[in-house]
Length: 400
Image 1 (cartoon, rainbow, N blue to C red):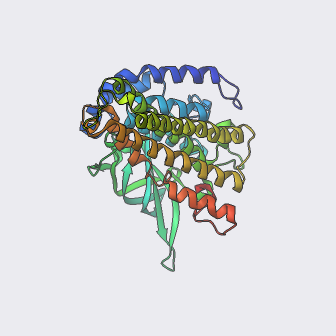
Image 2: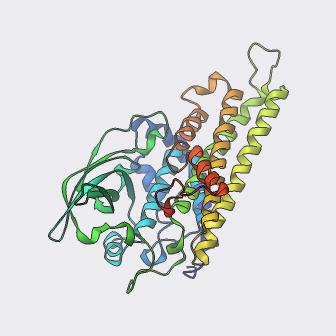
Image 3: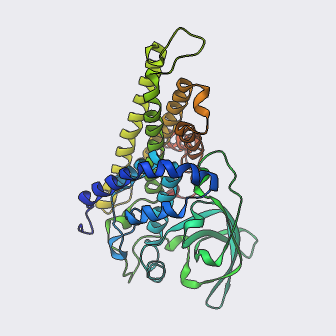
């Protein structure tokens, strides 16, 4: 095991290889997960056996405490087989990491039996009312990716003050056995993530299972469960840059799946007997490949930013945060454009369900529109910082 202020790169490389070895299995299971609109139990079992669902949790709770860069590479390898499985991989690991930042009593409850599979959703927030020993919580939280596979989830809540104004109330952590799941996930992409709506109705949540925003992370007087590199990851940059690995993997998978057919498939209504003979195809493949490779370089750099900050036990500066947001926006942007190019090269035939590339295209198009990934929002945040327009549009510095 690595020192708590080091990342075990040897173990990390082993985990990346395990993820890569799962690709044939995931390619076969992906259509099944998509048809069922949730990741299958057999997929979760394989990820668990490979120790891939505890990579972001700290050593103190039996996690592997890997670097952000390692987690992003694992995500990319899983995504080449099944983007939905990679998405759930990132969500569960990110949620267990967030839980590990909480107060001692919360950590002790969540991790008492090991690193659990987790999901989350925060918007729109539910409501909470203080009662003896805890809170009564009500809410309906959509887009809870991996909710069918999870043991725990955390969900945003809020309340109104004496003047009727809404006040954010942080998150409540609940057992998934205490809530219900409403089947609402009928979408074009990332179908297999099972991102349905979680319903809580008059649910009692013990006091120690709610984390107000001001106690969500960081050291506190007398806090026992704190002091590893993972405790210092910048919040949204860590979540966003590791998830970028899923999108890079989708694009790389799309390119790899298209290349073999270029030397045998003709271009209909032209004299080209092989696509590979076309200068236009050569140019489009070259440009798309360069864009995807550039996105991977950005992926590495952005994760290095979060890793270095964690190892130095320091927060990112405002300039670093906004630059990171702008860079991930650009990577997302060029990945979507690169795969669009590949779909034009492939032609209408590759939209058939039997081809993996159409799933990569749909899943990437969906992932890029996630609130944390949307390039237009990222560009605006970075642009305002460069120009000096204040305040920025993020409601909290942690959400840049």
